[in-house]
Length: 125
Length: 244
Image (cartoon, rainbow over all chains, first blue to last red; front, side, top):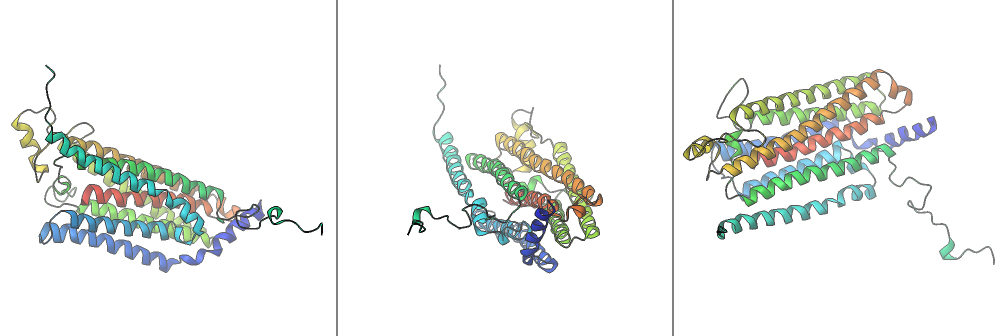
C-alpha cells in the first residue's frame, strides 16, 4: 500500500512544476484584473459615464471576459492545463452538447417571444 | 521461423494497451472530475433555461435596479457593489485553496491548516453575504413564486413593479426572474455549503495527521477541485444574473 501511495505522491511532484506560489498569485492577479474590468464597464462606462449602452456589444464583452476567467480557473487553479492531453479532451469535449443546447434553447425562446405576440388567442366558445 | 509473430498477434505497447496509467491520475481524482462535468451540465441546464426564458419574454427586469443595496451602508443607488464584494471573497478563497494544495505538495502540515482555515472563513463569509442578499430580496417582496406585485390588481401591479424595470413592465417576467434567481443562487449556495463541510472534514483529517501518515495530501487536491468548481459556477451566475 505504501508503495502505491509513494507513486501517487511522486506523480504529483512530477508535474508540480506548473504552479508555484508566484504563479498562483499571478493567476489571482489576472482574475482580479478581469473582474475589475467588468466592474469598470458596468459601473463606469454603462452606469456612471453612460458612454456605452446595455446591449449586444456590452453583453458580448461580458461573456468573453467570463470565458477567459473560466479558462484561468480551470486551467491553472484546477490544474487541467498540466494533465495529459487525452484527459483534457475527455472532460472538455462533452461541452459541445452544452453549446448546442444553448443555441437550441435561445433560438426556441426567441421564436416563442414573437409567436405568442403575433398570433391572437381565439376563445373556444 | 515459428518464433515470428504475425503483425496482428503482436502485443501492442501503447499507453492504452493495458498495464499502464495513461492519464497518470489517481482514481478518486478522475471520479471527482467526472462528477464535476456532470454538475456543470446541471448548472448549464439551469442557466440555459434562464436564457431561454429571457429570450421568450418581451421584457425583463433590470438587474441594476433590483440589486442596488449595500447592507448596512446604502439602501439604494449602488448596483453591483455588494455582489462585487461576494465575487472577490469567493475568488480569494479559491486562491487560499490552491495555496493549501501547494503546501500539501510540500507536506507542510501547518501551512495546509492555515490556508484551509482561510478558505473555510471565505466560504462562510460568502454564504453569509448570500443570506443577507436573499433576506433583502425577500423583504422587497421577491420569493419563489412571488414578486412585489403578487396579490395586487390593475394599476397597482404596474406601480409595484415600476422600480425594477427600465423598459416595459411584466408581472410574468418579474415572477420568472424571482423563481430562477432563488433556484439558481440557491443551488449554488447549497454547493458552497457542501464545500465548506468538505473543507472542514479535510481540515480535521489534516489536524489528525491522516494525510501526514498517508504520505500524500491528495485528498486536499480533490476537495480543492470541487471548491474551484463552485467558484467557476459563480463566475457564470454573476455574469448572467447581475451583469447582463
